[in-house]
Length: 590
Image (tube, rainbow, N blue to C red; front, side, top):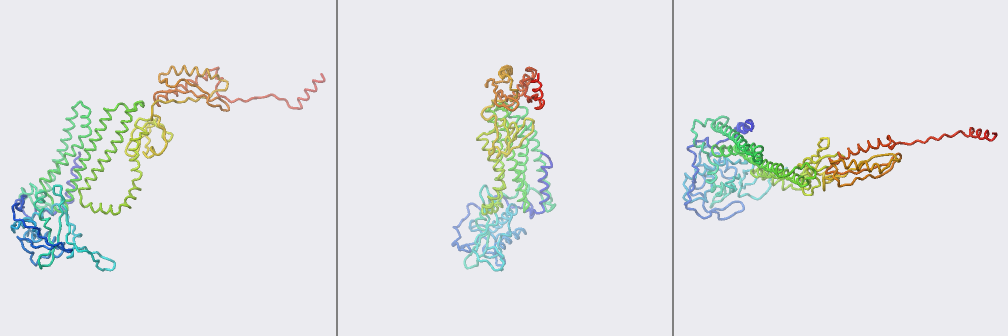
């Protein structure tokens, strides 16, 4: 773990703190509301106040016993106006004025004005710390609809809204939806308030996301602002980063030294492969927990910071799990499986193939799960998911075209693991190249040729195209030795000498008897084929090369090379016709 990697988070902190709006700046930490529940459990709770679910609003029979109706000077005519009033009043520490925007109908009837103001202060703290309000999505119309501009500048009629969501927060695994609701009380006109269900959850949200220990402990002089953020938070975060780095570093060194002393192979494997991701995971998790417990941030920066931290935690855990699985597979391959190099060891080569494919598939699955967990933590991606579902047809076509090759190769890898047309260690001939299967990865196979080149073959080609596998059923192989000799050669002599030569070879496995046959003729020679066999392709190749060399040497020495392949030209001594007649006439006179 390098220091510059650990300090990356602190750099992001300095870059984003201009967006921070800290809820703890308005007053000293000691004056912030306590995390204990404001609402008494034994209060006088009344029945549901909603009498009618009108299409445009909720009709209620009572409203906010401690506060009463909002003063006429307050504008609660639209969702945006109500939430703006609450935020601006709370920001100015006027929590009594802010409490008028809350609906307390689900709380006890004996709630005091002071308790109502405290709840408003707690809600403001939570909103400022954890909720990014989309003001553009809040309507400024009494009916709650969003204005839509058209080419004709005419209003579009729609169904009025009586409930609008302005945020969501996770509370111990439960989704708390923050809503604004339009209510109507007696003869008064309808207006918007923060819903009673949202107000009911304020104490629980504040207990989870309220001020941290250092927020309450820090004196006023430490709250001097630097780059729009209290200095103590910048310094405290930097100190936590340094502590996290050293904790991860110490953990890494400790694990390595502890496990390297063991004589067990699997323990040494842990020391080599798991120490680094374990150190990273411990450092990141410590920083995440310590920051949540000690320091709180607010505004846009808070959501960005906690999102980055959450991604870092999930990625570190995912990396550790990937390394653990990979280390386990490597340990099994190195200690529990025999030598896969000899081609006759079919079981070892088969297991190596399974492990190689399983490593890639499991790693791929872990990565997908990690990404899914990260995406599931961000509610802002729900709209993206809905858009993708709405355009599923187009997305499927695009994804299918773009990822056709990659997905095809991944599926082909699974097919190879199941059907086993090729295994690690097999001798194969692919596109006239002879080599050995060295590795089977996510999307391709690595073939080591006899001259130490590496062929990278897509797995789809292995499944869809023809290739030779000399080790598929058995490593044993028979190779032919082709020779050309003169027509006059005594083939029996060649058979006898070949048998003698084969008997003298230790590499001969004696599965195939010495055989020499005339398999063809050419214009100039006989084509002889001798067969030899051995335990695997490599040994058979060497054996047949040696035997061919010795047979050629024998044929060359046989009658001084008389039986080597040669071309024959026949010359005939014929006299011209006139000379022949003269010769015949002189013979008659005699």
